[in-house]
Length: 232
Image 1 (spheres, rainbow, N blue to C red):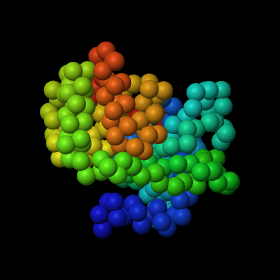
Image 2 (spheres, rainbow, N blue to C red):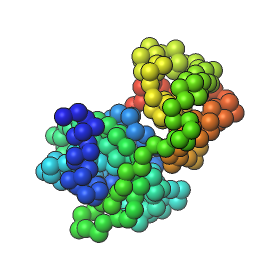
Image 3 (spheres, rainbow, N blue to C red):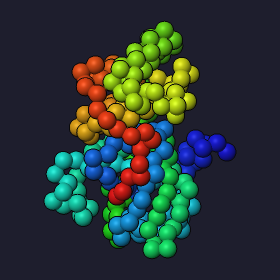
């Protein structure tokens, strides 16, 4: 079974009830592989339960501003759109902590949170699929022109990443526009207030146009490629 097929089967079996991993100052995207180091007791408990279950699904969600004062509570506010993915390459360390590789699979909407006894959070989720204007859906020229514009904007803005051989291997003319938008938005490594709207936008063309506009307004900033481990 393919990864996509395995994911869809797991999501259906879970009936949309997925464990939540809220993160500050980080915006996840579908298609992104993110190394994670989980050390807080509640998230160690989450991974213990996940390992004992028949599911590998874990949803990364974004904490809203104001999270610091109530970070350790279940009422710490989150944005409604996150990404549900699969925990792979899970390694339980001698100290009980976990390293894992999280593979983002699909945007999701947190409809509600499910009450349960554990200290971590459990969400009732629905998948959020990409959208495109029906008149533009089959317009290869629109897609290819927008993709070219996005890559050129990115190269101008981030020549350090654009010249990296890993970037050249990942970004190519065959990459779907939706995936390209998500990848470039993620690699910009900007504050979540600037990047979250691209996660929350289901319309691919709007996402691409808005991203091109943002990049045209930005000045170059430094970053590292590929990203480091993200601590909880």
